[in-house]
Image (cartoon, rainbow, N blue to C red):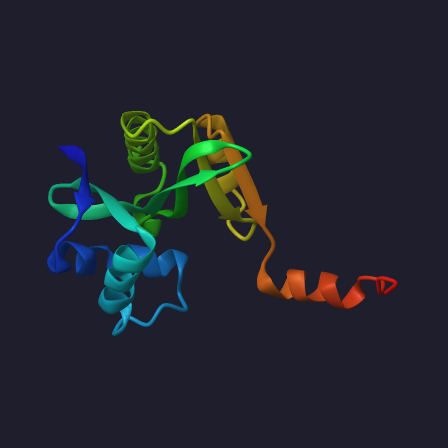
Length: 154
């Protein structure tokens, strides 16, 4: 049976590591636990995971924040389904849970920043009713656009 739970213990955090590293391959496996715990303490970062038969199938890293332009929001930093488990409903299950969590915490919107390197991710997210989807360019594209930008007059 599939279910979503908040991830709080060291053991639970470590169980999310491999799915998170599919999304964030530059993360050091050795530093993962200390990095997540530091972010939890200093930035209000939280983790949730979709489990099936006790195995992590999808993960979400998120936080609550308030912005002048949007009010209180639930902001999703990280959202990933295990590569071998995609299109089995785990992403939808986790997104539905995030929406309910946003409502339970009086958030006016749910925001998610998605890279364009995962071609199917933006259409999946938009079809699930994400309030605000920001598409991020890969670092190389951003660097190139800054290099090619005309100089501003001073």
